[in-house]
Image (cartoon, rainbow, N blue to C red):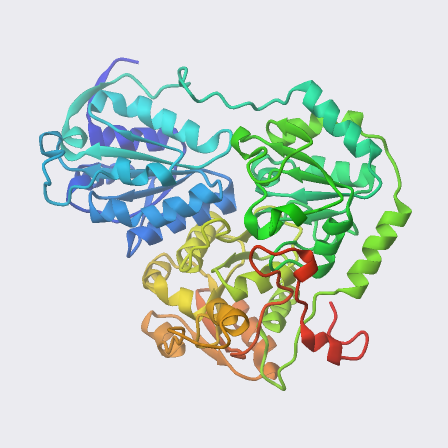
Length: 573
């Protein structure tokens, strides 16, 4: 191919087109305008104009999680780029592949406190996997190729490409988009495990009597769901998904347990507490799972599969670490695993499940959040894509929306970003236009990014919003209830009339305050071919149980005291 002379902004567009990007989320501004001037010539790339740059980052994140592709977000310099940071931090903590493209002040103005100048590469170092400041237009194709490669490979994450405005205007030679990535010093991920490490893991699994698997997001990212199912069935090992691992193992499988940890099910916590071997596949042992380190899985040896070497031994010592991609590692492991049965262990697991069930509370005619989520699950046959905010409703959704669809439960886990639910649902819906997407929201988090309802309206994205309105920052109130002697400080969220707000944004709004109206509201939302807001007026004093207080162990776990007041078999899953 003979060289063409193209402006830097056009080189960015060529790179996006070559990467197969057909959807980007962004907000224009002065420093990035040369890119926006050229994107008009690329009709294959649909630009979604979000109302805030944080919304663009979350939308790209939701798109990436729902599709498995790299999400792309765009912002201008200074405040525009900084507004991406919360979204980049969210995707960094949860290993979501994002490429963020930001404009920068002109090269001569860098470092001189120019208008809308910020050292964006410096600001985002802690929340990106890698970032670039591109100083020559001719470097754009190579940098973009590397950015997409780094974002999607090994443990995925966000990569930022910062480009000064005059570089976007500069004319450079273009001889075609690179077909491969040259050697990247310092980036040499181990994708195939060491055979000795795999053998060590197999020996512990074959010798175990009470093993349990902890399945994390790494299973989903590597597409290792079939191998995980094969391992669990061959060795008859129950599987506990992490919050970000929901969907990695079929939720209706007899070996499936609910999530564990601070707000995990009591029976899953007890299973892990009694296990003699815990096999972590693609999870980093975060603090919400392990609680007090000294008391975590006290009888268990640890097998830890992870592609990120820094996660091994980071929080919990692994007796058998295996570094590598989860799919490759399990494929190497499976031939070494003996087929077995574990009747005593599985009987004990069933006993714990029966004795410590997840429950759905009743509030004398007022719907509980658990009940609403359970009905959404049942009326969608567990097949919808669920995007949650952060807080009480998030934990109830994880407990009660049981799915067997990989990558269909989308939530902010590591960073715990309130406001994630609205723009991420937009991204998920646009990435999966034929799927039913439900955004399970808290009234407080919803108000942090509700401006993206305008984007959702403009894009005709038929997201169904279920707002669990308890008029408070619910999880903060729960902590103040349990640990601060009910000294309630700064948690009331007297918000707008959400039905009128829906109408203002050109979509139907429904309010539900009686349990008998829950089903009809859900069905009405499902039947509408556009976005809908359903406001559920839920009980203020509803608390998430079980709960292991921060830094404590399973022995200090608090189960719902309401259950002790009910006849056996009442309100059980």
